[in-house]
Picture 1 (cartoon, rainbow, N blue to C red):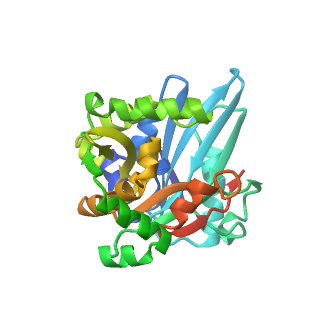
Picture 2: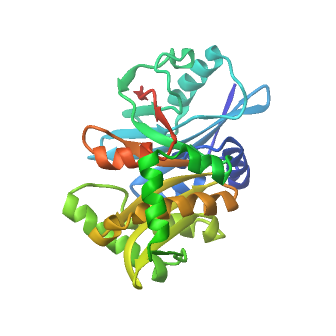
Picture 3: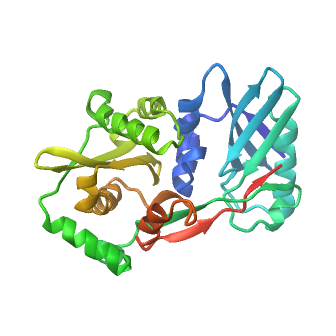
Length: 306
């Protein structure tokens, strides 16, 4: 087994990532967008008998100048089928060889749903997994619409009959700044934390073609913005990143119409899978029902392991 650190060309990484329909957190541009003088990104390529079998991106930060924390979220990416024993060896080798000085704490949150998967035998589970909703965009529009919960579909039909207009916002800072400003106002009102708006700027700038990095849709009522949603594209998959709505937008079911239009536009750009983001029916029942009722599959990940 050979571990190559920070040696894989971006083109090769992106090609493997797209072929797998892998997560946003393992996309090259995601790491590049979060890298700062305080946050280092380390990327590993794992080879067995000269063949690449896995890729893993780590975000690393040191706190109080002492303890280092390294996160490998929704990784490693397995580019070939690997035995459970080899997987366990790869986890150990990644932990041992990560080019970050000690003391350090390394956390893997693999893209697995079974916390007892044999490949995790070398690790200890320390965090429960989170849940999300995955939409299969390889289906036809007719199949996607038929899979919608009747209540969700009725609200979509009402929005389609209304005077709502959905426009695509150009992925340029001067065009999407209003979308981010409304998102920040919403965060202040609801007192929740998410990635800073600058992350969006960096993520889009990390792509040669910004239209292949994000889809931003805004709903307007009588020429006034009433709702918006932003989706980040990562290879052949996409992730819902943020959205907001005014009372008028909610009254006219703007998010139903925006998300439905987004499905079709993402399909046109070659996206095969849409991650709608976390669901929590206890703390966020309304948002969670909205996502679940799209007909997607609820996926609960295995958790965090050291």
